[in-house]
Image 1 (cartoon, rainbow, N blue to C red):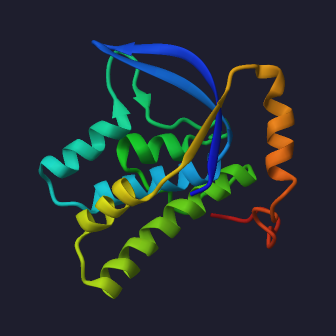
Image 2: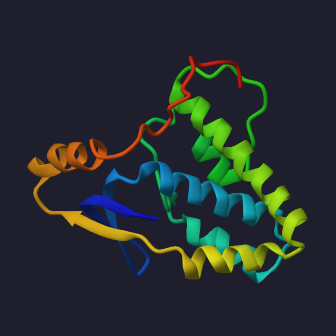
Length: 172
């Protein structure tokens, strides 16, 4: 799944667990897509320990809910509401391309799950096992925030455009 680059942020404590916040410099779209897919799998699973464990991995609850992945451009709370509550947006007017991308991503992962189960006949836990055990990221942590822009530019100047068919925002 290529390299994910991050800058370590503050530590957050929930009970006895310590979580290190990371500002993702490169890899946001891949990580967001995987979290959307994991949530879609959770929503499609029958009630039980696997569903509960997946939900607990994505949302850490204390006096402030901490999501496994938080986005900077979720102006309409589309991502947050989907991850916390399983809320799937209906026809709304997206105010930004970021909102549109999130809505599209939710519908795409749901369609993928349906196509995958129909094509393979396998259950969703086998897909989740593949994601969990077979996907590999290279993670590089930058310690000097002054290098963030340079690293981002180097990584993104050597590849293809992320969305070559980008069109102007539309109703979602």
